View 1 (cartoon, rainbow, N blue to C red):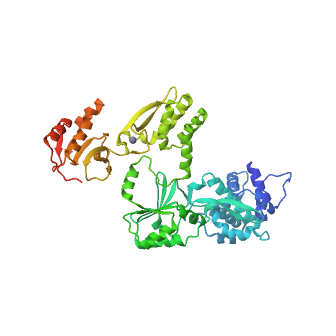
View 2 (cartoon, rainbow, N blue to C red; view 1 turned 135 degrees about the horizontal axis):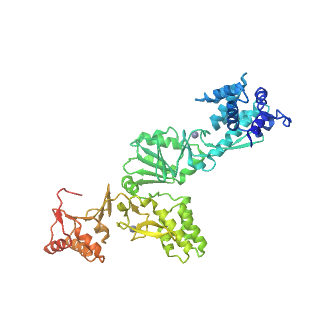
View 3 (cartoon, rainbow, N blue to C red; view 1 turned 135 degrees about the vertical axis):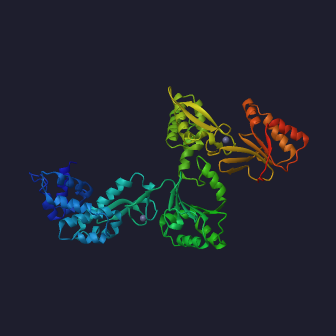
Length: 529
Ligand SMILES: [Zn+2]
Ligand SMILES: [Zn+2]
């Protein structure tokens, strides 16, 4: 569409005679092929976002020497803070045609939030501004579809924190489609949000929102009304704050949220004491209320390279399908599964992909290698601090051929052939012998303590602490170390420092085995555990 044609259409379809009489001086239409006014054909009128830049350009062009163009540009540029839509609706009847045009522009800038005010105009063909209102609604709808049409779900209304969605507005014999907040209908200020939306009640948290790897977390205590909710976490909140939340839930009329509540899980930190009536009310609302030893889970989840979300979603079903497709009899299906897994990495697909490195088809081999390298990308940054939380081992590094010329790096736990359970930021792994420690794994910042008594197998530790254990257990532990088949490990184990608790009583034979296994044995000075 050329510029003059856009201006010609603007002239042809604007119902404003005075504005048209000014426009005609810019439009070169010697054959008089166009007829005006044709306000009933408002759908042919271009949006102001297309017309105005052309007019401003014409204003810069000395050839036209038209003074009102500069006045229009100044008026548009001085529109910093927009007034309520009622002011601009009044301005549509102003005696000055530039004021009328600026008002129309301002309405398009306000966007879909003006639709409530414009509805009586677009539904009444006898209204003097029927054509203008229809054209304005059309311009705004087009803008929202262009801006948010592709990834609508990714945007939240800045005010309500509700996801944008497709909406409709009925006019006179027309239905408009647009994208906006379903609560307040605005689409002017939005924020991007990726992943599951979590409604959090936590007094300690001061920010309004936070984006993590797979969640967008909203501080419910700072919101006066409910926004998008796909999961609830009550971590720290006073009784009256929980009551206020329950009230909000009970008076909620939003169709999408109310349909979703019965399928939702509400997590409650076990430190957060709820009254029995509150628990009952939450249980009535949500499908499931789960008490959560949040701090430990959180510490471990923070250290996971691929954090886990307990809620199963559509995406996970699709991922399972892709993983099954890796074993398809048809090589082209296997290649396509590898390619899709490379595009959207799925950490638990690692083992199945790894097996495809031995595929009979070279195309599958190379596609699998590419996918594996992509899955391992988050691991490349700190491979030395990775530990498998299931096997308590460090990672194995391997170079895989991507094609005839290039290789890529992959990292994985050699014992379980997985990457999903890897934790990062673990600088030291200590083998602990402690009869009273209930947990197999305790993480203390960068230090992981693994209770050997719970697993009785050898793993990749950097130090040993014998706290509470009997002599046969200690002897069994030393025997496992000494019998380890790998000579390199033997070398390593001898250099590993061993600390023992001062209260431990060793039988002479145990003492001998201990000193035979470790070169340095020190007695703990500070009481631990
Ligand atoms: Zn909103
Ligand atoms: Zn493992």
